[in-house]
Image (cartoon, rainbow, N blue to C red; front, side, top):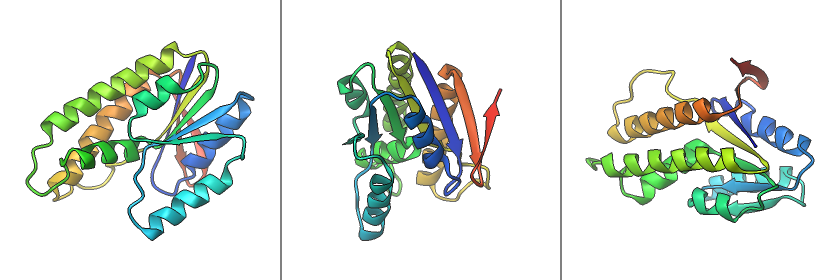
Length: 179
């Protein structure tokens, strides 16, 4: 049906906007959270996100976003929060973020998975909303792992934006439609 991409830097309000868009559809909502909680601070962040959502929403915590999307009801609204987390999770699990690692294969697999998600989103009855970090506005980082993450995330946001019916940029809690 429709794919909306919600972009923004860290702490911009993009998740809140994604949640508002999902709620406005009036359909059941499935949140896909592609994250492994690794410490107490991250656990607190995840708990805060969960607490902010309506209790009727279903949350699927899985890095296998394609499988989660396929398993969700076709008429449900999907909220994937977030693309950058998914990219880092996949690269991390593949060992591509280790010092000196060659992330070429993991990056190719991630790009293919993003293309699959874009295609699946277009074929669904329900709305799909993807929240994504708009990263890379700063200098080229010295870390190869960070450069890999930024490159794959940039490619992913461009691919999803090209497939999206709507793209929004959220900065300081304000939203701008991208043409």
